[in-house]
Image (cartoon, rainbow, N blue to C red; front, side):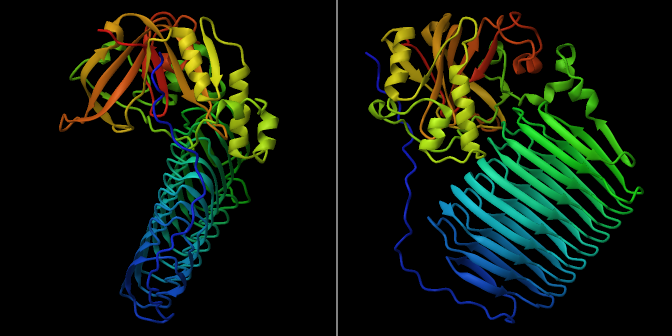
Length: 546
């Protein structure tokens, strides 16, 4: 008989505010001397450290780990002179967060500001940050992380360093490692004079992001602008970037990497370096992705190092040399690498899907598996990330199977078990990698065990799909070997995870442009290809009698 299915996540149900009573925090007066505050909860601050001269103020842990935080922070460090201020954490680890922050460091002169983390690891964010360092003079500005590791929500940042004078600004990370997030950023360094602006990472490693960036360095004078990476290692999604250094005068700008995604999405870049000042020098280092449009860029003063050559002229003869960036290190590997003591990269195997569960078969059987019917039933807006996920999932489920593939989309636990039993018989076991430990870094392989004695077998692999309720794309995979391996920390050689890997021995039906051949070399049918079963996915195989 089939063993019970491993525990699956429950439906994400609305939770309610805590009934704990807390003493109200003291509120500093607008002109009070600089303070250090730690651990404030659900408090609306109108003015904090306003018009402060010199000295230092700090604010740490504003409403951490709240279920539904109620926060509004209007002004922090406005009109200061030579004052150093820092904000460490705002509304971290929240559940359903609708907080906002109006103004930080506005019209300040000299000194420095630092904002470390805004809404880190929030489940369902709806965030707004209005202005940071606008109209400042010689104010050193640093923003480290905004909405990292967030899940399923929306966020916006309206203005950063606008109309500043001689301002060095840096934004390290915005919306990285998020899942199904809609994000907007407008007016970065707009109208600045003699500014040095840097934006390091926007939307890195996002899953199905919807990014919209408007106005970077527009109308600036003698500015030095750098944007390092936009949506690197992202998975599908829809992005737009409008207006980079438009009407800028006598400065320089560089965009180092745009769209270096793991899976390409829909990407539009409009208006790069356009305007009335031809003495502005702009360099674009690399612009990736196949499904792209690039509109309206200056015909003078702009240098593209790698755009038309490596992407638009891409073909199968040069796919290895021009597109190796597509494949995350460790995503594919050879069977010989599953050897005790071997050190290898581990890809990001985290489960980034929203928390859902299967519906009972009796209920899901009444829901038409049609994209428009599902979107209507669950009230999804047509342009939302989840609605687009429904379109893609239904499309994948209805397409014809590949050669030697038998597939089924399981919309209930019963469907999944029935399909696995139909393909493999009833003496089967389901396996998955234990956790996400080791993701994104080097790992050491510990003890390795070949399932069914390491013999060639067949399996059923099931991968999560983006849908309002749990749907798995399951397919029967012939001619494979399945392995379990201890995953060790490289430095300590202590076990940190237990991984499941599957090696495909027949790749003859794979596309020549498949990422596995990009990463490993070779051609279809020439080599075997192995990969880990990601956290949240699973593989079924015959029970191990070895």
